[in-house]
Length: 241
Image (cartoon, rainbow, N blue to C red; front, side):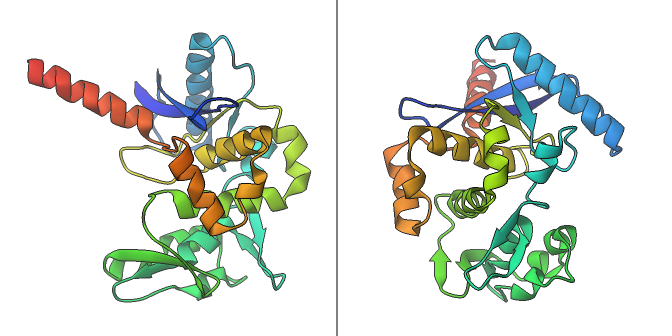
């Protein structure tokens, strides 16, 4: 058994995306068949516990749905003001600034794949991560923790208008590869955030950095809240013996 978050856009209230940690049967292994078996198991477990959600989408390269695969950060493309296109993954990894190097803008070259960008050895040998720099002049701090990734992904998705109509039919999202024990940013959460902002009429907040950051002040924005709550409950139980 394993636990993974399911993200549901909230149309009302001070929480933008509800995070529910769901326990399900996990099929270990790296093959696509095993990954997709785990996805189906996660979705079935969630739908059994939810009476409001009918349509759930896996957002990853392992998704059985072509839309979910298109929304993977490896595949979703963003176009910069000069017209150059690259994947969200390339854009994110190339924006990192470390103690001993970065940003590594060469990771946005056409000859570099999304997977190569993510695995570039400089990302793990350049010291502590200090900040993000986007397009040479937009600096982003490390806090709020997921703000830069969320902003980058949401803006990329907004550019891909052809995906919107189908996407907005879904009301919950997962990423089988995302484990809140090991990672911070989650593409499924970013998709849910986009859907929430779209349905609330808050898309005017996404373009400008300062406007986007006000969302983190005005609303509850945290893609690991359910995991953190689960950890807190476990610690309390451990303390009780």
